[in-house]
Image (cartoon, rainbow, N blue to C red; front, side, top):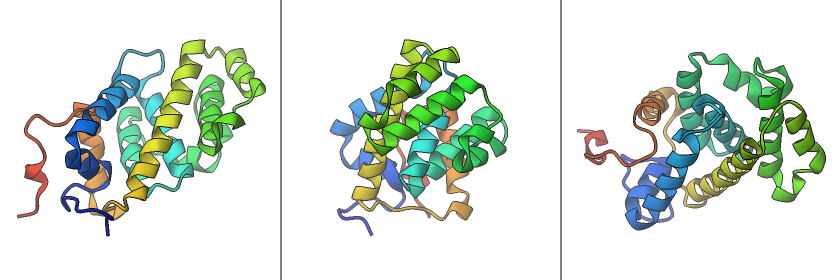
Length: 188
């Protein structure tokens, strides 16, 4: 049960963003910029960063939401599941593996990112901008995970179909508030 009164039809961060639209807008803008803006990392790769950090933080809502979005963007479901078990076994570039390892270090503690981990990513072709964005996305999702779990938001059952719909909304509409709001999600 949430620590404050939140709309039950809006689980996870969505309910928190509706609760405080004033603080929600800069959160939405930054997320939209980082995960959907122009970038040399694909949207799917950036969603992988959000997923691994959320998974390692144990945030069920964010893990399921970003796994669903990643799976849709990648067009398959295996990569996220492999990543959660062993980044080295993922069917992705060595550069992306190195960036995901940096994101995982940020999840532990920002100071866990070492010069060696950055140099490894650079040796596989990661740019300064990609390293910057990886660290910022990872740090941002640490904040989101703690926000969602720290407020004890509603977490739908993973088998309910909710996360598939949320993943589609993220992929198709990004991170900005839907123009019509979210009342249509209320159960009749």
